[in-house]
Amino acid sequence: MIPLIAILCRDLVHAFNRGGALLPIIFFLLVATLYPFAVGPDPVLLGRTGGGLLWVAALLASLLPLDRLVLEDADAGVFDQYAVRGMADETIAATKILAHWLSFAPPLMMAAVPAAALLRLDGDMLVRIEIGLAIGTPGLAALAFATASLTAGLRGAGAVAGLLMLPLAIPLLIFAAGSLAPGGTGALKLLAATSLLLAAGAPFAAAAALRAMRE
Amino acid sequence: MRGTARLALDKIACVRGDRLLFEGLSFTLEAGGAALVVGPNGSGKSSLLRLVAGLLRPAAGSIARNGELAWLGEQPALDVNHTLSRALAYWADIDRADKATIPKHLDNMGIGHLGEVPVRMLSTGQRRRAGLARVMLSGAAIWLLDEPANGLDAGAIGLLERAVARHLDAGGIVMAATHQPLEIADVLTLDLGA
Image 1 (cartoon, rainbow over the protein chains, first blue to last red):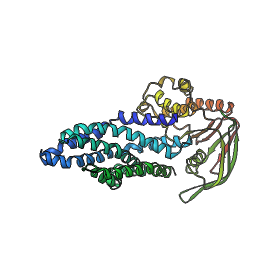
Image 2: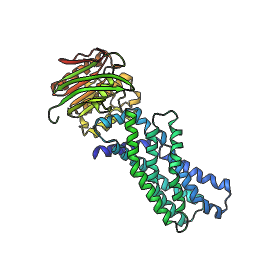
Image 3: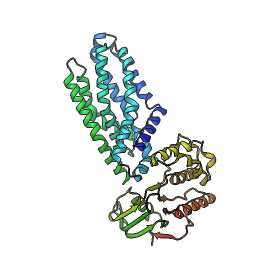
């Protein structure tokens, strides 16, 4: 267990040191700032579309650190070192997914508060967005890591990973946006199910990709 | 070290792509045993080491080992933005090794003065020495060294040979792939080019 905590801490330190956590937040807030300028300050329109917009921004923000999630450690031979120590690739992947989630989801949820204010969303809507983010971001983090593992080593990996990940993230987006509507608890349950499926499956997909990279 | 270190390869074959690199390779290293893998470029020296490390699967045959592994690959796997001591401390955490011994291992490789220098500032040879210090720090019984002398000057090669000799005296096993001569007593030489 102690080695896994060491891996988790190292990944978190890396993410925060390199502004990996800050960049998605700035991006997220920028979208929320620019949107009222583009569509006008009409509170009804903003209220109806703002929640969905924040989810699109969150999805795109989770793509930003994709290119260095796996590639750096793979190039530096860190994954080889874990494998030689007999650590299962699945365990490593799950630990790194958790670290990635911790590095972007809590800051994103904090940034959602000022973002909601910028879009003049009311308190109810903000609560629904925060619940959706808490439930949906583990799925996003898992999907991001699995995609980064699959594409590590390809030329233009960042762009390919984005192209590969976005279609897979669409169910999350649909259910997340659905959960914002009044009486959206059904969509919230589907969001939770999708997120759980991704979080449970991604370590195995990522581990298979890491093994294939070694061969 | 727990138990007696042992490494046994039985009729190992290695295929990379569509090419058979070697087959029918068998040997056993008991505690204190060392093997040098030599051969021309592309003869499968690194592949053999990766097989033993478990990073590749053999096309045929089996590998039995008793003892933890320490692996020195092409890359030292040290965080370039951290100081050398901190980068090594990470692997000490992973291996549950004693972090207080880091300065000793750095001294053993002649880089005791570089502990507080960021890894990215180190030269190729210094990184190689740091990678070797990480192998020694791990406390693993079986050392697998892929071209350990790459980038090392004559002095550092001497330090490496002495560290290997100490490890073998302590009942460890060393297996190294190299195209440079390394002085190791009673070494088993595996020539993949022959």
